[in-house]
Image (cartoon, rainbow, N blue to C red):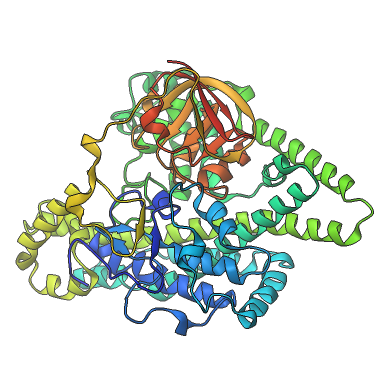
Length: 579
C-alpha cells in the first residue's frame, strides 16, 4: 500500500460508512506508517476476527473485492463500515439495526435507513442462533476479564523489557516497529469484542429500564462502576494538582506552563523534588497517553510533559470538595439507589429479575473491558512509536529527513529500502507530509454511501461558518451522563492546549479521546459534537460524576464561547441561556 493519500476501495455489498466512533480516536488523517503497521493494518483483521467470534457470520461474508471491509480510509481519514455493524445488530437476538445506530454511532440525522440497504441474506436464523449462544455465554454469563488481564500482563512484560532505543541499530529499530503485529491483532480483536459486548449490555439495560417505566435510569445504572482505566489519569493528575496549589511548586506553575517541566527539574527545593517524583511516576505509568494516542505520529505525555502539566494546572483551581473521588462516590450512591428501584419494580418476577441482574453485571463488566483493551493497545502502540521516532531522529540528523516525524510518512513495506538508501526517500516523504498536513484542514464527510466524494469537494475547516445559537435555543443530543448544571461554555477544539478552561466551566468539544478526559475534573459538564452512550466522554463522565451530552451536532460551532448554557444530561439537551 503506497498510494497517497489513502483511498481504500468501497464495498458495493456493504456500502454505508461513518466517521462516528472512530473519529474519537482518529480525529485526524492516519499516517502511512500507522496505516501499514500498528493500527489500521491490525485493527481491520482483528475486527473481522471479532465479528466471527461473536457468531454473526464467517469470514466468507466479507467482500473479497476490497482490501478493507471494516475499517477503510478515504482521504486517509478512517471510517467504520456501518452496514456491517447494522448486520451485526440484526443477527444478535434482541438488538436490531436501530439499536446499533444509537448505541454505537449516536444521533446521525439524515443517514439512510437500514431498510433501504437491507440485503436478502441479512436475516439468517442459523447465525442468529450462534449469536444468541454468544450473547448468553460470552456476554451475559461472563464472570471476569481474564483474557483482558492476560493481555495487559503481556504488554506490561513487553514494556518492562523495552530496550534503550538509542543503542539499537537502524535494522533493529525497523524490526521493532513491525514486530508486534500478531499481538496487536489479538488486542484489537478483544477490543472490538468488548465494544460489541458493552453495546449489547447497555442496550439490554435500556430495554429493561424502559420496560419498568423508568427509561431515565438506564445510564444511572452504569454510572460509578469503578475500575475504568480511562479514568485513571484523572485521579493521578488530581493528586499532582493538590501538590501544586501552594508553596514553591505553585509559584513555578504561576509562571506559566511553557517551559515548566524544565523549571521544575532545575529547582533545588525538596517540595518541588517531591512533585517531580510524583510527576515522573505518573508519566512512567501513562507515558503512552495523549491526543490521538493510537496514531504513531502523535505526541504523548511522556514526549511532551507540558500536555499533562496544562491539565494539572487547570485542576489546581478546583476545590477539594470537587475531587473525582467525591463525585464518583455520589454516582455510586445514585447507581445503587437506581438499582434498588428497578429491583423493587421487578419484585415477584423472578425471570425478569434474573435478566436484569445479568444485564447489569454484563454492562459494567464490558464497559470496563472496552476501556481496558483500548488502554492496553495504546500501551503497545507506544512501543512502536519510540523506535520509529529514534529512526526518524537519526534520519533528520543525517539530513535525509527534514524532521524526525517525517519517518511516519513511510509505509512499512518501504522500511527495508529506506534503510538501504535513506536519501532516496527525502523528496517522497517531504511531499507526502505536505499533502498529509493539508488534509488536516479538510473536513471528511461524516457519512459515506457508496463511493466517497473526491477531496476537492470536501469542506475546508478554515472556511466553514456556523450560525450561532441564540438565547433560548436548544440543541438536542444523546445522553452520556445524567444530571443538570448551568455554567459558562468553554469551546475547546484541541486538547493540546487546555489552558483556557477555567474551573466549573462547561467543556464543549468536537470529539474526545482519553487524553481529554482529565479536563472533565475541572469542568462542570461536558458537551460533545459527536459520540454515543458508550463513547469515552460518556463513560468517563459517568465515573467522574458530571452531566454529559454527546451527539450535540455542531455544538462547537453554534455555541458561542463564554455563553451561559444549561446542560441537561437526562433529557440530552443543551440550552443557551444568554450570550
